[in-house]
Length: 586
Image (cartoon, rainbow, N blue to C red; front, side, top):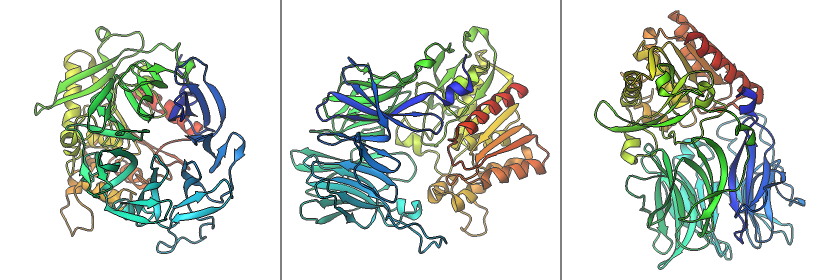
């Protein structure tokens, strides 16, 4: 029997790291609820049982040992390598040094003053032979990659530690570790990350991911070091999601491909297509390790030759193997304007379509640049498997704005959120009703983040839903542009900001708060008190509007939580509260 405790206590692998000799794969294992992460080790061929190595996170191989983070410090199995009085956020073991990113050791000021309190995370180097720590770059560093010969670093920096404007103005530079010389490669697009090195016939290259138009998802950019020219090498209609550096040859990347995941080699196209969702990767160019989940199996580490079959080498959640799961079905259907869309349908255990019509809960995804792949739908947020186990059918739509269908599909929601997106959701709902799967009198909707926005939008556009859950959702795009940490990006989605004159503003037309007087659906509003992505004020605004118009609703605030609910007791409460809400109303 599936319980809330079984969900939040289940373990999930992440951060695979392939050993230099290609024989071992180290990976992190964490519970869904906040807990102490662990480092595990498995053989690439799967011939030995995986074993726990230590408590810690972010495993990285040095030439002769395995390093990881614990309590904010870099450790090996023998203990911490050195002391540092602020948290280390990233590190790279090298042959003669360990490069790491961390703020200064001085404590933050007691009084926060915007112009004085910004604390850059600087690039530093630790020499194990001497114990000396030096600062390599004074800038705010967000990502770094080592050249395969350890002669240079590629570094992504921001002009300020703030996401706005720092994250909107990233720069790429190269640092020669022998001479200390820094070479600027210029400003790069928004959200630049994951730099990797590779050597071609024309010399060294640095490749990275970035969002060229702020909205529309990541593209792959390549820079030949000799020329410094930034070239967009994104495969046509591809949605890259991860890059990985290999020992030799062009880098590999994971690509969201509709409901599945492809492996591409830069400049060569797809070399593998995996059914389901892969969201982490490590490779030496010949062997690849990925974290992969499928419709009927949760995330595990899989290994195999590049372009060949994968073998599962971990079993991190064996307690889920004996739970009866309902069928998960792939959907393909047309939007009202003829655009082909996809999604998933999850039915209750032991049921088929012929047992319908069912109460149907529509669960739009977050992002909007995200997607539902055909993976295992179980998690802390009231997920499809949790809702289906209570007897509901669950519709997981992939409306335009998300991953898996190319740049134009993803960018189409700029200044148009809620419009075609909502029409795409309705097209799927209408199809499931027409096919006898969904009972039109028992429809619900539940979403988190951007999915929470679509929930709030939907209940202001229609009265067809009997129950709704708005999780960490947006009700006012203008206020989000002013208070959310992704402000300018939110203004791009909502179409305007409040300081653009007296209006009328585009964001008012696209904000659920503008339609609150039309809401009749009971709404459960849930939010983290310390959310900086979508601040709590969004939930409070919608709550006050619904209270003003006498709409049945409840507001639940989880103290100490951000955009993701992490504490075990809070996750348990959310799972149970959601199931009770839909059980009562549907």
